[in-house]
Length: 185
Image 1 (cartoon, rainbow, N blue to C red):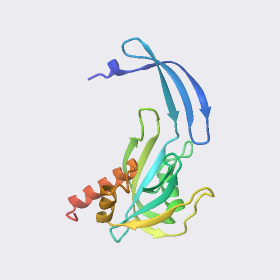
Image 2: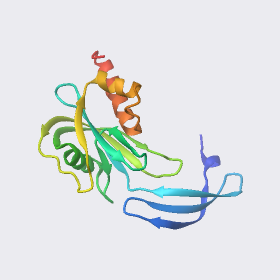
Image 3: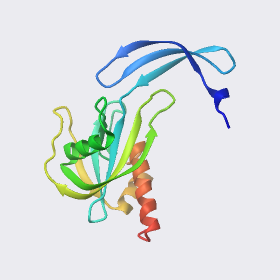
Image 4: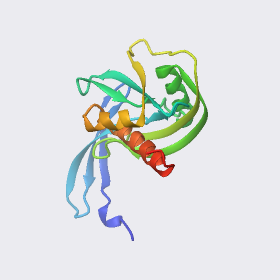
């Protein structure tokens, strides 16, 4: 089945803002019915997140303040891709920088758009196992606490509203599903 009847064609676009992390563009589009509309689009180089599984059947989570939400959020370790960077290499870098751990085994979990209504950010999620603690190496403007949780604790944190970051929910629910399939639930 063709999706041509849903496509919006770009008539023109202009960059409104160029930043360190994002750019903002304004697009004039022709709608499927022939009318024109405006679309604001945030351009982002993409990001990674890591579900780091320990040998104790726990996962590593981080807490950090997120200015956009004005809150300290509980998240899976994550970070922005450098322009042109391989997502797996970025995931390895971010895990070590944020948590101090390196992993011997990596598996791609999924890739998904974080907010496709206005942004092109594509998040790549990985599962990391075979963890070894090295040294946390935060950027000078990063302040992060690292901690471990069990499956029951992670689920309770979701129920209690302590975890509501989408990438973290995606990773935790995948982990809980995998555990259930293995009879660990």
